[in-house]
Image 1 (tube, rainbow, N blue to C red):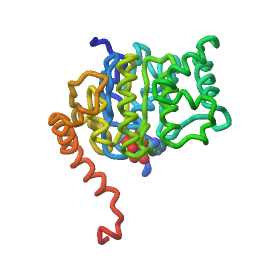
Image 2: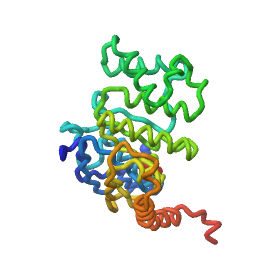
Image 3: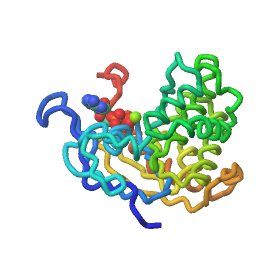
Length: 273
Ligand SMILES: Nc1ncnc2c1ncn2[C@@H]1O[C@H](COP(=O)(O)OP(=O)(O)O)[C@@H](O)[C@H]1O
Ligand SMILES: [Mg+2]
């Protein structure tokens, strides 16, 4: 149970050359172990490096310093599509292919035998209540439905790790909550390790085993909060006093960070300058 799926050691990321006027230190000495089957949320003010950290784990680039291992393998800027799937805020479905064809492409890319493509796709679509839309095209679906399909596709490919960068950010709150329930169900059923970026406190508490609260830029880990509640989680969890307490704890931790981000971004005119 304590086996690490992801091991991040002293990772820092600087964009641009140190000393250059536009140089940005996005991450400052991040160390984090994510256990197999764990659901970890990254929560923090905008610009604190959440996407940067996710992209380092995903092998989209090599960090300026430090190391990241995924399933014991060093991730040094080379993606491991056999180990890791990404789900982004915007649906990345190909618009000119039907939903089922989009799944077949993803499964083919993963090297899954063709005889299994449709069964796997239909199973995943069924899990998010979208099996009757398999032959539709993405633009025939609402934004919420597309993101549902997008999530199902991320889950049906055979990776142990799923990285999700604000996947529900474009959706209304009710749709987000329903998709959050689906995700908790899928986590319980598949045992995948998930790292999820959100700026929603309720989403973080509802979904996470651990919430990693990050400081304003340069992003550091401010604290890690444990949420001891088994998956799949029911909406009743949100009615428990413990849920509000955890949400308030997250808010208290974030408030100062958000204020300092806002102060740094303030329009000079409104600040009276
Ligand atoms: N490719 C890049 N080049 C230069 N700066 C970047 C790049 N990507 C992100 N940044 C900067 O790094 C900081 C962290 O960005 P990001 O990881 O996207 O934060 P978050 O996802 O928490 O909003 C921000 O200040 C952002 O402007
Ligand atoms: Mg981001």
